[in-house]
Amino acid sequence: MVSTRIDWVREHCRLLRAISAEFGRTRPFDGLTIGTGIHLEAKTVALLLTLRDGGARLVSTGNLNTTQPDAVEALRAQGVTVIGAPTKDSAVHVAYLDEVLAAEPDLILDNGGDLFARYLDRPYDGLLGGTEETTSGRMRLEPLRDQLSRPILVINDSPIKQFAENEHAVGQSALESYLRMTNRVTNGEQVTVFGYGACGRGVAANFRGARARVSVVDVDPVTRLRAHLDGFGTPPRDTAVASADLIVTVTGARDVLTAADLPLLRDGVILANAAAARRDPGQRRALPGPDRRRRPDRGGRGGRHAGVRR
Ligand SMILES: NC(=O)c1ccc[n+]([C@@H]2O[C@H](COP(=O)([O-])OP(=O)(O)OC[C@H]3O[C@@H](n4cnc5c(N)ncnc54)[C@H](O)[C@@H]3O)[C@@H](O)[C@H]2O)c1
Image 1 (cartoon, rainbow, N blue to C red):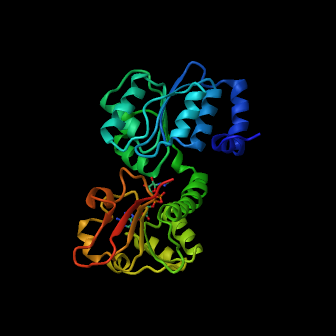
Image 2: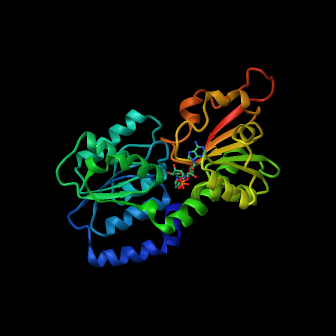
Image 3: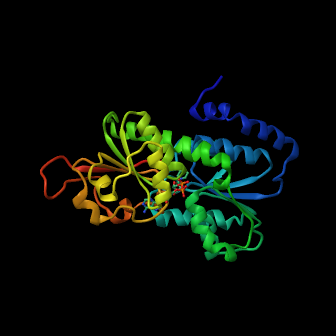
């Protein structure tokens, strides 16, 4: 009998269930501590409990601003050490990372490079290596390769991750989050997607499937051509910004939109980010302030910022 959302997800992660059964026999992580700094939600609970079934001692914390309390509760109920609580405060988040690193894990599971980067500030003997989940984490850790000098498997480089998660899952969850958070329909809305990599392709396709009019902006002309041949509008950047009811940034780059873009924006435009929150778009850094802002030159309803993440 499936009783909770976490149980339901675990029930449906069949590969992980099979791996758990195998790990129960082979115990590959016996005697090892795995430190994790990944999103804590129902699916990652299934992942972490799989590692625990392989013999690992887990010391886990979440990523900035994404930790789900029921996931933490479920892990703690299973005896997993979970550091901290949901937080939007970077300093608090770093303190949680430090607590994970204080356990001197043998292996690290990272998402966005926070744990590995922090490890360089406070190294210890015995770290064997680990995994990094994201495109953004890869970009962040690549220049640190020599300093890290340990094998770090970039999950994002797996072809399956590229299409199964980045393209299909991110696209669908960005649409689902938009609908849930804004209570608006997409039909006929003008959506501008910044970035037409794997994630951006999924976002653009899902909003088009939901009957929005979708334009794509990408700094790479070849990628723009691909978007054009996929049937999306590829207007000049400022035109795409000025005409949008919704702008989704999904690039992995900083300052994609900045305060300089404010005069271009339509009243009521929604700004959303489907990429790694910490390192991605300009919205959070360059357009700080209240969620609802009124354009000074117009009397209409204010635009909103909406962070859209898994
Ligand atoms: N929300 C999630 O669950 C989730 C999952 C996977 C990846 N991500 C994140 O999404 C982001 C994108 O991942 P991806 O795999 O699609 O990356 P990618 O490298 O395949 O694509 C990024 C695209 O953005 C374009 N770009 C870069 N700077 C730009 C700018 N200033 N303006 C317009 N276009 C620009 C690039 O040319 C490229 O085509 C990364 O930050 C990644 O970590 C989020």
